[in-house]
Amino acid sequence: MKKILFFSTIVTAFCTIMSCSCRKAQQTTATTNAEINQAVVENAISESPSITGTRWKLVEINGKSIAGMTFASEPFIEFDSETNRVSGNSGCNNFSGEMELNKIHNSIRFSKMITTRKACIDMSIETQLMEILSIVDNYSLSETSLSLNKARMAPLARFEVMKQ
Image (tube, rainbow, N blue to C red; front, side, top):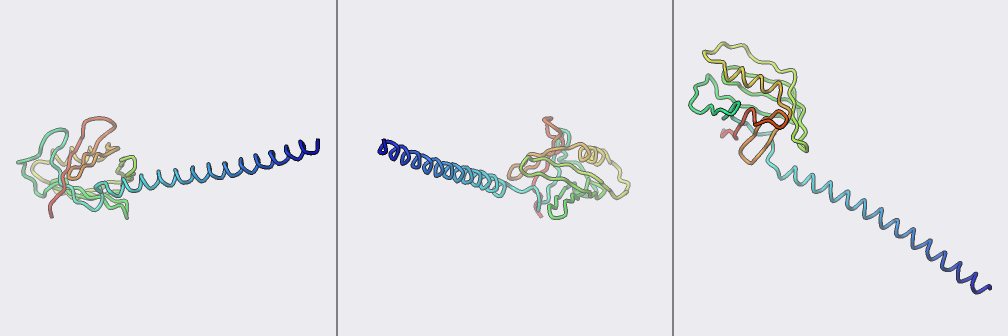
């Protein structure tokens, strides 16, 4: 009887020790998986072309090319992630404002937009661009192209990298 009691005590102790070490291994694996997932997300973001630090020239608005149109200044947009500001030119007037940018979800919103008040002959593109900036909520980005979008609609404004 003493042998059976001794043997069952040994087996119970062994099982307890093994279950503790298995839990530690599971916790270590979960931590390692979480670290790997975070590294993958960070690497994907860093390898993607950046919306910030680039000057983007307007090439299409509401599905129509602006090629061949004459402007007082070439329409462009820039994003500054350090100050959370957007600025640019809408073809006649300069504009700037605040932005909320989430690179993981490709979401973007603009607020507190201000513009200069120059009068130009044709302000239709400027009017459309400022309206788009007030409703846009996401963006699409490729190596040379940026699209500003509302929900899942077709791109409202498309930009290309501006050669400086």
